Length: 401
Image (cartoon, rainbow, N blue to C red; front, side, top):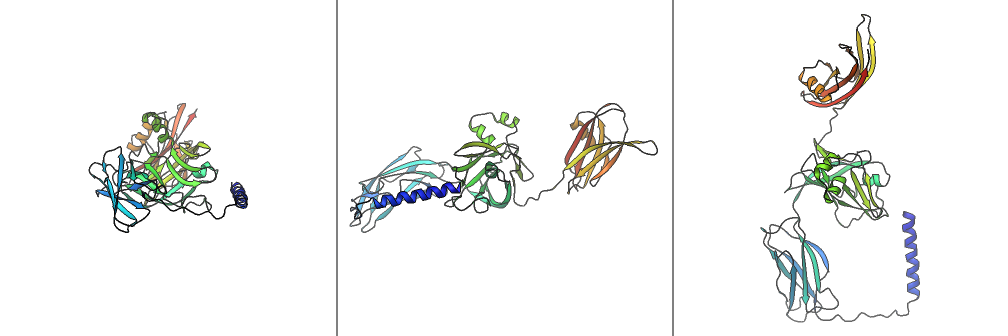
């Protein structure tokens, strides 16, 4: 990738030398600008304040010999903006300002309103027409630094997933709508000089207004590693944009989930896009966002049937290996004939099914109370220090006695 960039620069330098050496006219003189008004740019985005009633637009002219008035024509499809029909220059002023006004109770935030202004008489050496988007961004509050694990840009390019801190904001008008600020900027360790556009801010927007159906909106990253700027998206957002049913998307497991301040997505439910096309990423499901102030607790558990044994008194036991997470206060372990795991879990929790208590990872000896051939569920349920159920693990085993 870097070799190609270097070769291209070398080729351009050769072409530049050839063009310079072939030039016979080194005495070109710029002509005098014609009289008239103009705009300094032909297109842009203007952000206006929803709490105000107007925003300024600058009009310029080529000479300033006396007072002058020029005409302004406006095209506004929304009909919500009022533009003065003239702009007046005073004395020796080369610029003047017109105010585009609006009713703050009628305009909406985060909506791009298209407006085109045309000035006359105009100079042929400037822009007579100025087309811009007027938008009032909804307010965002910075929550602090979240812990972000990226397996999207990294995954697209075969790099290991990486975890680092990124500023996160929440929309003031829509609780649960978040955005990461420059997630692939200076904090991202994989960028080399020139790989990232530092000219503006880039945001990764996550709609977690429904914590069970979290959507990563299509977001430009500002990264270009030689194959065009990369953007990221979730499969859920992609299929919603194509008109698919949200319920069908949920059934396919493509939405993200926000639980206890942590946002995660299933493996291959995220997309990275560049000029080569679109590819599923997050192959191992490691992409996640941990909200500021959230400390992850490990209430996990594993359970494994390791066989049966008989003691010296001819009593038979199941040998069960139990592994508990570091934050588990205690756990209940049971062996039950049956196949309905949810029903068995409920029985262990409410005490209707007999279970043994453990408080650390260990090998347990569970007495064999039923010697009926069939499917047995080996189950462990973990609790926190307040006695609240946190997690469950189980294994089903076919046993014959």
